[in-house]
Length: 171
Image 1 (tube, rainbow, N blue to C red):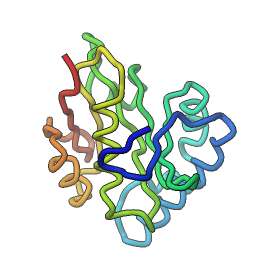
Image 2 (tube, rainbow, N blue to C red; image 1 turned 180 degrees about the vertical axis):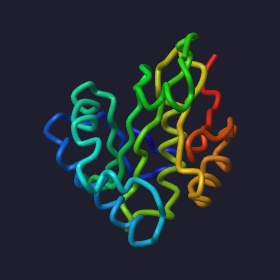
Image 3 (cartoon, helix red, strand yellow; image 1 turned 60 degrees about the horizontal axis):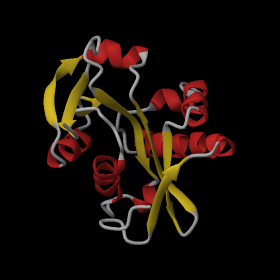
């Protein structure tokens, strides 16, 4: 449970039976992004990544953010590179990173510093021997890129229209 920045919120590992709720929430966010003409996550609307999302939940790599028992956010962390991570970052020969995917907050709860709180929770609560937290996002999503920079992430470059970032979390 994380109480410092997110008073009244809880972050916990998602349960398998919550997979469909997480998929619906991610599609809600993807639809909101589409309506705002932000080129991010459109593939989720057509069911892209559904199986990967379910597998991440089953593997206990997905977390949910709750406020008064309502799911308002999610993110996935993995210490194992997926094919996309290898494409963006190259092979992690040192195996020194956690990879963050699908950090999402439902639209009605955006702008409440919940995403920032989730990043702080990861740094403060993940019991890991990894040195870095890595992520990527669409390069032309200025707000999202500024969000990560403002939260201490170092820009590592651009690959296929995606900015790649890392932040030291350990060692």
